[in-house]
Length: 351
Ligand code: NAD
Ligand code: TYD
Image 1 (cartoon, rainbow, N blue to C red):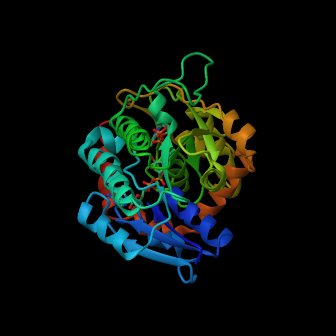
Image 2 (tube, rainbow, N blue to C red):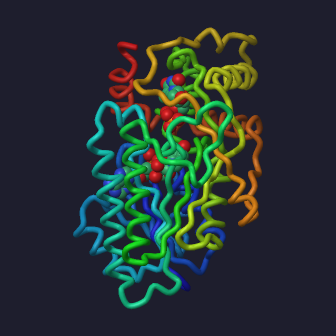
């Protein structure tokens, strides 16, 4: 194998697509998926590639420095693509500490391990940190987030991600660690845990459950198909300039209520329901605390410098996503039983 690449959080939503991208396109890389398997980590996501000769799985909690050190003793690591994180804003409001441990301390443990492992040479090494547009706060008026927009994180999730971004940059500046960072907008697509808006709405419509829309449904998100994010990560990993940051986004802003209505229309059609049936499930509920109004990415640096573009338009991507959830009932049933129902009850009962 040419290189050994650790992909952290590879059993999660985006991570599983990144693992697949690297396994298929770089058969000469050994791809090591490093994941603790929290409620959000699911090895089912990688069933189709787990027997590939260039794939390994290591169950490791990145918060544990000894376990991380052992991992770096076992593999001669050339690169890290770091996605492991607690990723859901609502959970960060109800229990922030997990976010501090994994997103901040976990990231520093990985940085320390790279610094130690690469002390003799930094040639051809890279620590690639995957972050979010939420670090920039809420986009005022018609403005867009660029790579130089000042950080203004406003939820425990975004504050923990911002903190990890700063630490990654600090290790680059102080210890010359070769790093690159990308900040991406909201992703959607197959394998997303149904606590996030799009899969939750699909799941509820299918089961004729109420669709909880926070506040007035006017908050705006910039949606990107997950495979386009995985492609961007591949390009940045191979072509990105060390020390740089790249924003990734779909140039695709939607109010939440419009996304929900579009999903209602798509599902009425796919489930042979009378038009308007699913929309009756829309229920406005108490708003999320500190709910950011608008996220909007300017991805022109990535487009102009590395030639990346989106490949899937939103309606097509949503239809594909709906098809995937309808065709993969067993995947959904496995994760929406037990703990998920308890979470759902806690999260939505008094809204
Ligand atoms: P996810 O919640 O689906 O998956 C996270 C993965 O990390 C899971 O497999 C989980 O088991 C693993 N993990 C969590 N804690 C860990 C620990 N302590 N040690 C090892 N593994 C651990 O998340 P996602 O939506 O796929 O997001 C992946 C990354 O992309 C995150 O860093 C997130 O901040 C970032 N991101 C997500 C989005 C989005 O829309 N989902 C957008 C931009 C950036
Ligand atoms: P989410 O998928 O949690 O992503 P993020 O908070 O990281 O943007 O939510 C997307 C948007 O949808 C956000 O504005 C909150 C809203 N939302 C609802 O209206 N109802 C819901 O049940 C959920 C989970 C989210």
